[in-house]
Image 1 (spheres, rainbow, N blue to C red):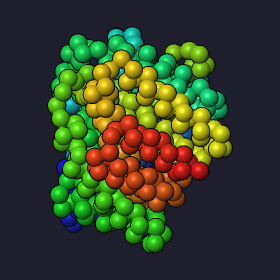
Image 2: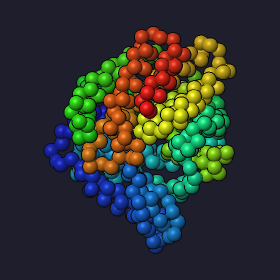
Image 3: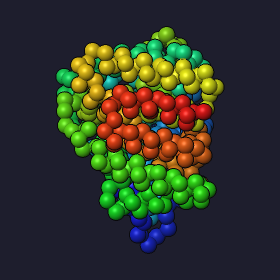
Length: 404
């Protein structure tokens, strides 16, 4: 169902407090099922727009507990996409018994990756009642390391992709059955779902109602309409079926932890494995690094070093490719980057004001005009037939501007 669908049910929309209380009760029930008699303490809620995540302590052991409502984002649930609160509560017990429930697939993917050995992933501690429990990974995230040591950007990215090398081999994709993929985290599929047809236009027209000043909201809506229209025109040809590899799918700086410090191997959390073009993981990491810069706004020298690292990383990816293949890869990266940026920004903008946003969410909403301007200028250059390498140069320049 489209996240843009209008609420038509007669009952009340789900309320943040009752949604959170329901998830907490499910977490406690799942703990009782997995570890009977163990003392459980819910210590801190981790703000998210996708699922309900809580740090907990079970019998003295620290864990993360993740709960998903019907495999949808919290924003969609709170906006009534799945119906009123009564409908959601009735549907949830049926959903979590399905073998293809979102967190069933996520747990299976973590176990598959643990079996592969590379990349390293967080440990699955248990799964019950649709609640996934994972062990925390101590150490700095890639996001923290980029801001702390921006000159190491290219080196850190290369370390991450060296660990993804086995995943990206063409034969590895056979290890994941099609039913085990997490298409909900596919950038292209999410973009198509959110901005398809009349419902997509309705969704765009309602953005920012609870998050933006009216003047900013009008500008953001106009820019996004233009960007979405261009991406719809470019998407079919640029992302035509080709050789698929197994991509991690949700490669964000916050999802990469370095428990042994920046010189060690990363540990990844929250996979979204699916067969896709090899450019997808690089595009997702690029997109979220740019949004990190837009929200954190580090010093000008740090911005320069991180952007130089992005440039060096892309050059390293393209070095073994033939010129035509390199241009195609870079064009794909740019389009997926833009789609991901539009996806996440519009989700933040459509979130009810009562839903706590992740730490980077509020700064991005406040800088929505600047981020949309970046997407508008890059998509204009890309849609105008400019050579992909020149568009890439434009994109890097716009990244410096949005971070300034």
